[in-house]
Image (cartoon, rainbow, N blue to C red; front, side, top):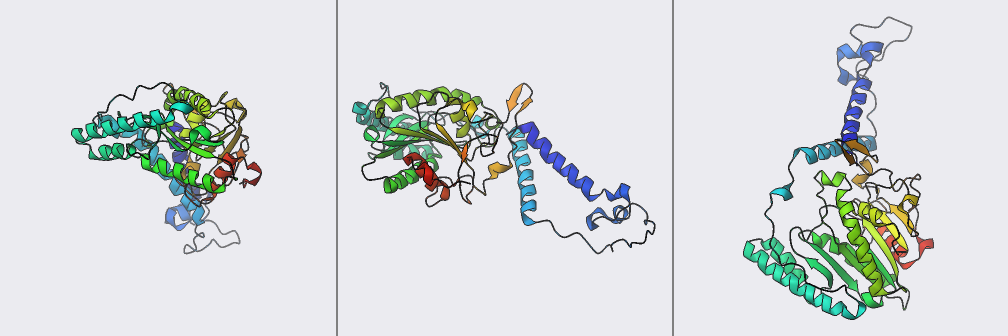
Length: 385
């Protein structure tokens, strides 16, 4: 999502619009009322040519509502990008939240899952006590919820923004597994909204899986996500840091689940950049990009994966207004290139319905229904955009 490109595009839109409204200054043709009398008549009354000019009271019909909405969104996007550059990051001024180091565990196996779950719950409980002593009641409550006996974490790290990998279902015996990778502004403090999507997917998989098919969902918050209002969300830097960790985790997951399991990687927003950077050679059946600003790859083929590559965008997702370009700005590459739902990218594009940027895993949504079909291997039933 190119910073320089986005701001320049918004400015050029405004300039083009201004030239269009007041082009009558040089042409002598009548223009809209908003240009003023001098503009309507080019400074002087035009010569008679057999056709009377339109009365000043006649104004062009209003532009369609969708056009006005798109202009508003572009203006909002330009303001958002400008704010990301001008304002300091809120995280930079927030005191670091104390927490114990992660539990020291060997890579989990099917036989040691319960031990890993127990150790990470204990770590979350300790993190809650430390956060409470530090006076951060919000973090203390979030950590405490993660320490309840019903929660199953393959990893937990309460330091800083925090990271966690949570399991829904019986991972060791699952036939179909979905791994969710979140986008910007996902942390332990905001984890519940990410978890809600994973739960919704797990519920839908449980309902729709054929008899005898066991399913599991993994919510992988295994990286420090960028802030939505930040310069880091405009580059691949955080994704480059996260990709090796995602590849390592996917290898561990394969060892836990065994070769029989079909694994799908479902990636949202900035998480699509993370998945794209990690995609080469991953042992997965499907990779789905939803609400993507671009993946940093020019095409699905450039991902160097044998997995089926899917993409979707909701009709009301603001990400559609992001310029899908890459530009060099002060030695840094800004933006993520080709739109994954465009024909040029070459993904299997599926319907996501009328939802917005945070609605892809909403219960009852078109996108959740299609993501469920992808995970279950019912690819012929996926509705196309």
